[in-house]
Length: 501
Image (tube, rainbow, N blue to C red):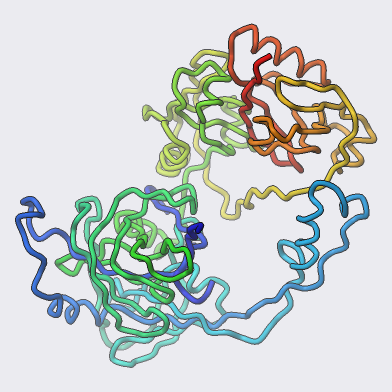
């Protein structure tokens, strides 16, 4: 049975240092830190949590967000040439579901429930962005039954955090931030929230893991907990044993949408800085480089002569970005940034986001079998950076050259082919006309209609160029080649193993 990472509420995400939250099930959990610095096995579990729960509960609130539900409209008309072929199933589903977006027609209003907590007695409330996004009206309900209309001060989709303000003549019960960096695996934690609309629900558990990357965004750094959290807990606080907030509950991992003992919270040391930016500016400032990046797999490292699969592979460089101005190229592997080693993709996203806008920083990249140093002046991340999506499409598999070492049939990218694929007149490369089903190319997801623009960082303009590049790799005893693939305007690198003759 496949597992699902989902948001925990019934609705529908910085300064430096931040963690990213994505479309995950809404959850809320409170935490208790270790009871002493001595080994955990030397201490029994607490006799009870009643005093702690009584102390912290007044600061936890229920969030009710009124949203406009939308339904998919009729599917757009699919051109005749795309209705049959290897991706017919996709377009059939596309037609049934009204496309990836469809016509979003207004539907009756719906109430979404979530959790939140007060961090300032003047009425500042923290919750998840997905709890209040696109809300026409937001209400905050305290444990004593008082209800306040709330104003959205600011939200950050990348970390799934939002800050609300309620107007009140009396001081509200606020909680202080704790230091999440000091929390350890095995520490007791407490969660208080609004699961399934059942306000004031408390659950306890321990920290199960630190630094979890759940694939929700570039800043993933979650605290994993086993305190039960469910739909409606999203945006609630995770408390330590002293009643300090060490996390914001955001997501659960589940095969069926219910709690199975694996929940995720944004660490307080990330959330606190994001919240501070949102309170001050309504938005979060982040450093920006302007590249699309991919992990460096063993196949990619082998194909480029890199000894270890480390770094971040540059799949695309945004025009007129800091990266382009600094001379970064498609196919570079970033190995260092600002004196810090880059081992994984998220290492680069975090260090760039943490860099002050305008700072000039050294970038170390792997290019043409050697290390090259560049200087980049970090820019400010645009407020609206469109998501990179790749949609399936159907292409005619026209005949061409058969390259058995890759299991591909290649064809020239002529005018007729460009027109058939919807490409611009200045598009260059070699179109994949066929993929052998039992080859590594097929396993890596290559498909007819993909356009190969580079092989091992060298541009190709004809099937013979690809053949020569592959032959060069074979002569160098390379076990794989790195292809840069263009699929409907989106570029990505794919390392394909060479078949033995």
